[in-house]
Image (cartoon, rainbow, N blue to C red; front, side):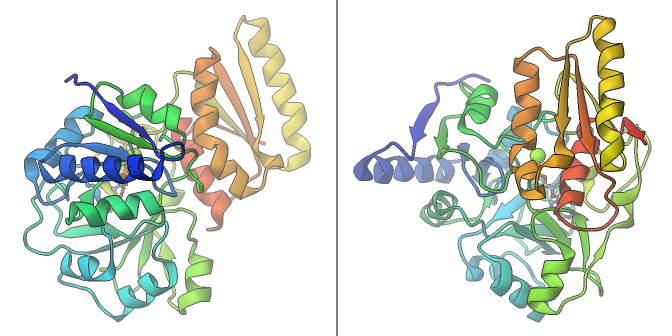
Length: 345
Ligand code: AMP
Ligand code: MG
């Protein structure tokens, strides 16, 4: 599918250009087209969540498996509550504490959502994003917007304007860019249909912060701590269907070198010498030397840049992480990009 893409660079546009651009984008969504837009986590590829044909185009353009549900983005609490039959006190408290922001709440879906949006599930993932452009687009479209990450399925999620343009130019009618995404990894997905809510996908909003701000205790989906090599073929059925796919994979082979900080450097040097002698182009990352915020912000861009630079192998040094903090969320993405190829020291 090819078409001419209108690109609105929101940061550099004048006020009238912004206004006209957002109006145009909202009109495209209303008539069933796709618009890529910035959020604070990663760029999203949006369509009218209530229009099955429009949502179908998201799957086609991305090459996304049909059993991977989309997150539905809303502009306000009323729209959120109208999108589920289960808006309750817990949802209200979580929304008050974290919305607008990088937290997705999984709740029973309201009538009216087509099966394709939720991949046939009886639940819907809802999020009120924090990015002002995302919020303006959703409210002007006057309907909830289903939006996965604005990349081709399987590759690293887009966190910078050039990532979206590289993946989607000439494939969608409109792309709105607004610089780099502040968080850099996708939203935390929290299943609220259980008595004790469960984090299905770790993100910037951690279990600790949820408890601190709301007093609500949440657990981690035990599947998050299981390495899956052939998840798509294994018959494994995680609660967040997207978690079973090979994801974020660059062309380069990613090898995670994990262990105590003092052993990472020497081991990476040793591996680098071996691979370089074998004629491979090797990139070395000391993620263990970055703050988790910076690692989250940079990870997807690093993966894409390594490919552009023609790397054959990425050696990613990290310290061991078993708890549920932000490093755990970064590690979740990194392990997937590596296809769970880990050298534990
Ligand atoms: P993406 O849009 O690519 O960030 O992927 C959305 C993620 O949210 C995937 O991992 C989905 O499996 C998960 N998700 C969305 N809706 C639901 C839902 N109703 N139940 C469980 N997980 C969901
Ligand atoms: Mg995605």
